[in-house]
Figure 1 (cartoon, one colour):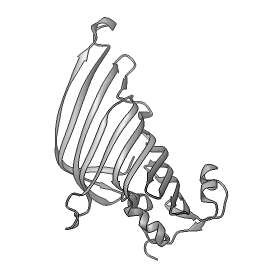
Figure 2 (cartoon, rainbow, N blue to C red):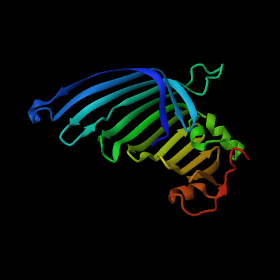
Figure 3 (tube, rainbow, N blue to C red):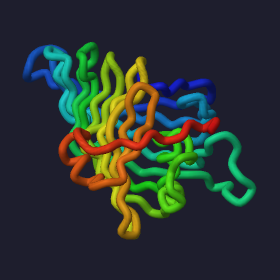
Figure 4 (tube, rainbow, N blue to C red):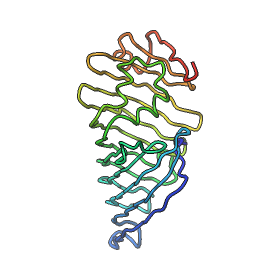
Length: 238
């Protein structure tokens, strides 16, 4: 539902689980699982991706009776990530370090994963995947796609119907980013607000269309993406 498809690579899984016999046989426990990939390959929105992934899942409270698990403290590290082929001057690739401060896992439910995330990103290049194309953006907004050293936080939910990002807040030197996004089989939707060097821009994503908001974009965003005059962004072929 998120549009992300794993296409290749190898992985190693290790870990441990300790059951608590005081609450009934096999009804609760704690543990830790680790997943490490080598030369993983995937596609997102038709864009080929490659890199390494390390996921350390903290199993703080395993409630098997209710099938709800506390995975707070889980950490995800992405390194050497490239979209397509790494450029000759960028062999290190893109990286990100993420920690789930508060997180729960409930297999089989509508919201399988709910979490509050803190992240450090090498730069803002993943915005390329959100904006889909630089065409139609002001020149100052295009520069947002290469801002270095981004710190961000968000609430996320992942389940049968797709992947949702709630109240994403990102910051870097002279950059502020806020977003609400939904990724479903039917497509992407949501609102994005960006402020860079004193200039603001809003973007509404719905039905495969991108509409830009230049007039009071922060006010538009804080009203939940309602009201204001929209300017359609040119398609990549125009």
